[in-house]
Amino acid sequence: MWRKDPGPELKGTWWKDILIGIALVPVTLGIFLLLRDPLYSLFPRPETSAIGDFFYQVSLNPKYFYLLLGPGLLIGAAIWEELNRAFLLSRLWKIADHQAWRWFSILLAAILNGLVHMYQGPAGMINTGIYGLIVAILYNKSGRVLPMMTAHYLHAALQIVAAYLTVN
Image (cartoon, rainbow, N blue to C red; front, side, top):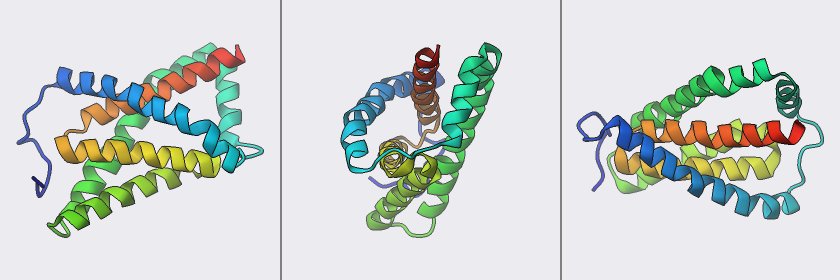
């Protein structure tokens, strides 16, 4: 049941991976939207956010918006998923070969995913940590990173487009 190391021995195709990533987006965005208001009622939003100011400024200039939405987000999502899922988890899974360690590694990766989003405040960190947990579990089951790259890109892109539409 538990593989020592996910890798290319697992069969899959790029188009199935992309479809799985697309199917994952309603799940992750649905959880995000369900938890957003209860979490922000417990943990207020940060007063100021440099990243929020950045997205606001980008939303004012279509050229920068499309640059961010296209290559910027594609590269960012791909690199993050490759480093956080494929590299970090596969390296951690080589330390020990038992179920408890594997789950501890998945939880650790999810916590790190949340901490990277500290600028969003506690509610954003929790929500992003939950997202990281979902995709780490999927990576554990499939051993494939393209579905996570696809889901990460679309998850973030939909939020960026919503922010753009709000500003404009």
